[in-house]
Image: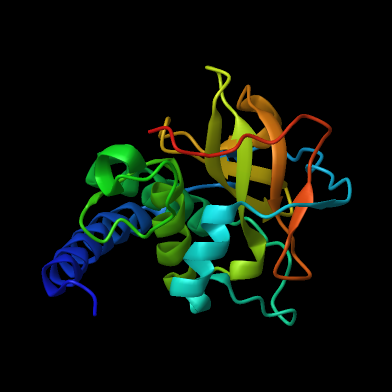
Length: 213
């Protein structure tokens, strides 16, 4: 049985985020196409990759978060309103959660979760963003959890959003939603779009965990 205190805390967190996101979206109609990011080449998959073990365990606990609907679009058309929604959710989740490593939080090296108690590390931020974006109407198939090597040479998780203007990255290290090639990261692998699996994004060795803050 899940801890009811954590569930009620998660409910308050989601309610607060909903207000922040609604505020951000309210100004979207004033935006123009000039405010959207320039179109870029998407990240190319290079074959199959081994799934992150902590992701597999997460999917066993939250099956609906990992389910793949092949009838959904594999990318979204970026509009000013959608762009505002994406940026608002990225900023709101980054501001709302408390950064803590899985070792400090759970006593294990790597655990993927939905930050139900308001704290988590990199992948927990991105999983919560994905959940909120799905609730805002974005197709889950266009949102792919992604493993990278960050500026410190450590394993890190980001959320890749596949759009008609290229692949954009939501990250807890910055409030800016950036094209994937402007993050400075080495991209290792991401969730596949046609199966509950992972695909490689390059030849670099995959990190064992994505457990930094």
